[in-house]
Length: 183
Image (cartoon, rainbow, N blue to C red; front, side, top):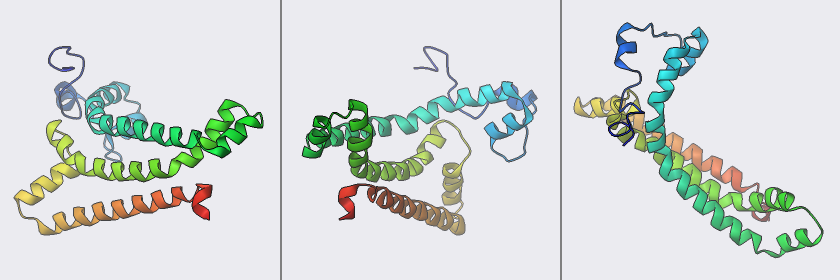
């Protein structure tokens, strides 16, 4: 829709063809946005950001909606608890009650699901990179599978597994922030 009908966003690639062919693309860190900022090449930076919009939306849209719904339901559950009513009866402001008491206590289930969604987003990059013609780990694995490059497949599998385990550890550490979990 944004590409075909509205014509406001590009469909794929990291840069426009004109910039790829005729622009001086800096290679310092191999991270395009950082390299263009370091060299002060803001026209390429702007083009790279515009090319990022649709892949980022494709990766994040479902996760944002699910996280918002989960946070809302956890907050509604916490807001009906007795300690929230007590905090309100002590005369604490609505902001203090929401940010200091309710949000901190609803963080546990939300953090667990969010870290899992980050892990799933890591695996969804394979599909998004293919659709939007981006070079990355997804393209690397696809080529490795076609050419039967077992060490590369094993390496990406191990990195993905370590990422999932690390994210679960992070979720468990965030859950410890909940005062009810410490008992």
